[in-house]
Amino acid sequence: MKTLRTQVLIVGAGPSGLLLGQLLHKAGVANLIVERQTGDYVLGRIRAGVLEQTTVDLLDEAGVGARMHAEGLEHHGFELMFDGQRHHIDLSRLTGGKSVMVYGQTEVTRDLMEARAAVGEQTLYSASDVELFGFDGDIPGARCTVNGERIEILCDYIAGCDGYHGVSRASVPADAIKTHEKVYPFGWLGLLSDTPPVSHELIYGRHERGFTLCSMRSATRSRYYLQVPLTDQASDWSDERFWHELRLRLDPAAAAALVTGPSLEKSIAPLRSFVAEPMRFGRLFLAGDAAHIVPPTGAKGLNLAASDVRYLSQALIEHYREQSRAGIDHYSARCLSRIWKAERFSWWFTSLMHNLPHEPEIDAKLHRAELEYVVSSEAAMTSMAENYVGLPW
Ligand code: RFL
Ligand code: PHB
Image (cartoon, rainbow, N blue to C red; front, side):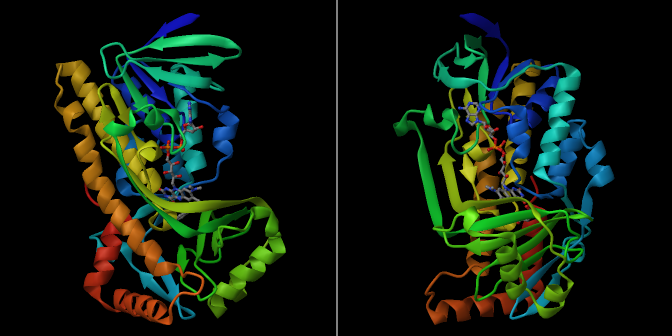
């Protein structure tokens, strides 16, 4: 068996793992990433689209912001649609000039992968049977198989950035971790197409046929989502059926403006709220989707992953530079304080915008009243806007 040695072993080459690797590299902390999939597979997953200003700043700090600033779209507001009407939420006016950046997770991941390759840091792709050991003692590490060869990696710390289905959280003894979970009884069917977006801003819509979101990746590429029953499969939805259903859920002006075309990708994502506490077990840290999931309605998942990575990179860099343990000891509490607030917002926005099959009429009326309140009260709109652009660190 081959043995490798590093300071920080990162499990998972999604945005959390790659961003952590880049920040550690810049500070001179050696790191190695093991990833179960191939790089192309990771890049093929279509996910997040909206970055908070603090995420943009962190990507700049990691030295990977150039293409994002050139190609990303700065958005100063979004639209809430209900009862066939759109209402503008002016994020910048309500938050003292803040905005969000529309730039796909695929592009963030590509920028991070290229930066990592350029500095020559190692990533072991297609690593199977990853097993973690020793993180409750002084010599943690992992074993995995790459190209048929068994490899052992010894390290000082392990960063579990391997998503909801990863090995890191699963390696923690059940009595050392508490999980909180809520699964929503519907999913999001997403479609990506090379068509111009229906509006220059994102539209979040509530409709008696179900929620809809009109998003984008660029001036020529759109991303649309429809609330669908969990029993549906993406293959049940031809492109024609998707476009027809989307039109039915849009206001008349948007329905008339919608440009349709062949789908580049179509998939269904389930929605859940999930938090695992704490986020550190001895020398193992959890970060990003490995520790928490939010329903995508508030666009918070990737942004929360970035804020965990910010706290973790600071803790580790401080530790190696100054032999300090403060950041390590406070990592979990710092992350969780931000996470629970984002969980609350994502749950609230999800509950407000979706409808349940056979929903009692009183619930629909209450949601409608709340939406009317949100768009008519400066205080309520400000609360929504400050959460959407991202709470301060
Ligand atoms: P990822 O992206 O899941 O990456 C984890 C990586 O770990 C690998 N892995 C393993 N590697 C080695 N050994 C193992 N045993 C392993 N098990 C797993 C996996 O192959 C993978 O490469 O987690 P990470 O890095 O924490 O990033 C989190 C984000 O991907 C996620 O929060 C966002 O995509 C959520 N999300 C959104 N977030 C936003 O901030 N804004 C949005 O607009 C937004 N929209 C979305 C979203 C998520 C969606 N879906 C599909 C869940 C829209 C959707 C539809
Ligand atoms: C996306 O563009 O994929 C997207 C945008 C906003 C969300 C969720 C997803 O809230």
